[in-house]
Amino acid sequence: MQKAITYVGLDVHKDSIVVSLAEAGLRGRLREVREYGKVLNTPAALKAMATKLAAGGNELRFCYEAGPCGYGVQRQLSAMGHHCAVVAPSLVPRKPGERIKTDRRDAVKLAKLHRAGELTPVWVPDPAHEAMRDLVRARLAAVRNIREARQQLSGFLLRNGYHYHRHPWTLMHRRWMADLKFDQPLHYIVLQDCIAAVEASEQRRDRLEAGIIAALPEWSLAPLVETLQALRGIALVSATTLVAELGDIARFSNPRQLMAYLGLVPSEHSSGRSRRQGGITKAGNAAARRMLIEAAWSYRFPARISRQQLLQQERLPKPIRDIAWKAQERLCRRHR
Image 1 (cartoon, one colour):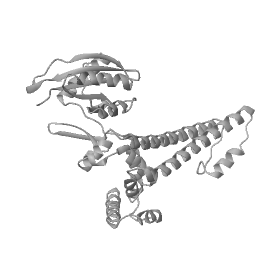
Image 2 (cartoon, rainbow, N blue to C red; image 1 turned 180 degrees about the horizontal axis):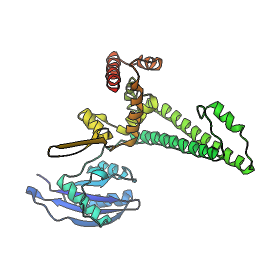
Image 3 (tube, rainbow, N blue to C red; image 1 turned 45 degrees about the vertical axis):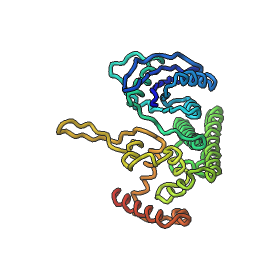
Image 4 (spheres, rainbow, N blue to C red; image 1 turned 180 degrees about the vertical axis):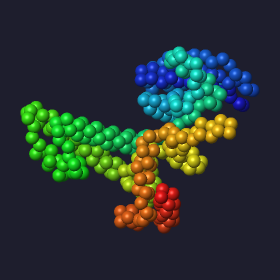
């Protein structure tokens, strides 16, 4: 016997969840969206709410927007046997004239759109994949901290008339900073504090990279990380970042979908006979897009296999090596 479906919109926050219901009766009859109310964002309260709704006999299909609360709600509801979609907030349809936003309205809108099939779900990683992604993102945050600390140190030195004209942040550069002289004694305190901030950020980055290397052999996607390193411009950290951020690449039916997800396709505003294309859309995952853009710079040189690439490719099957070389030849030719 066919069950009626109840679409449940959840507006998830740190302490509470606002719930709305949109029922789709049998034979396609739609019913008015109604509010269920607010529940605590705890496993016990969520279980009680889902159990109460399921007691009516309808099939439940939950949805909520991806956000800072993560995937805990989705995993708990899925473990209870219910379908729960985590949707992309940037792709939720919005009316141009909307000027009022409340938790209740958001939950009602999600329930309506979910019933209409207008929502775009995101891929939900398993706990192990999410842990690796958190580790990769912590490293990216450490790299940003290094850049900010170095900029602060360089700005301080420039304000006091010092500018290093050779390659910065080498051992020679650090020795040069250690020999600097200032008229004000307090400037020595500032200098040492800025240097300590740079060194602390660098040590944090190194620790996180060591953690990535240590955790990689136990990761289910480690073979894919090793395979990607056959490509020019992609080393262990960048390959791990790409795989951790992209997740299951098989969900993309063709390369165009993958590039659109990464925001590496041209923007377009066309109407009638007029066709205007602009820069890349920059939609989707910024970390993965940045890694690919940085890797693309290596293809401005003629195609060749470096010693490091040769050592990496020794462990890979010949078909993979052939594909990597074919890709390098094509990309180097197109770049030139």
